[in-house]
Length: 125
Image (cartoon, rainbow, N blue to C red):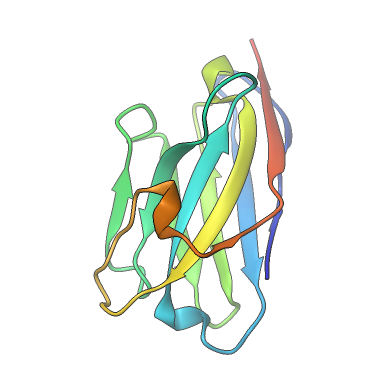
């Protein structure tokens, strides 16, 4: 089970940090991705971290502004979002998939097995 938290209202140029808490004892064997879905749009990949956290990947529009990290001792993945823009407004979802490799990264929605319920992020201009 994945539970996101930390969403809310932010201002353009500001910051928010999302958390994705997982239950279970094997979290360190799962790669985790963050996706977002804006009203009227398809869910899109944002970033992902490998099971060890050693490998990360970002879409171009958030690279340099967003940072994904994980603490496997706390079964939690974080998404630090800085320099927020109104176009970052969306429901953000974390997702997890069993990963056979410590460096494995998945970017497709269909690659992921488990999903959180989502948390709303709204950025005002």
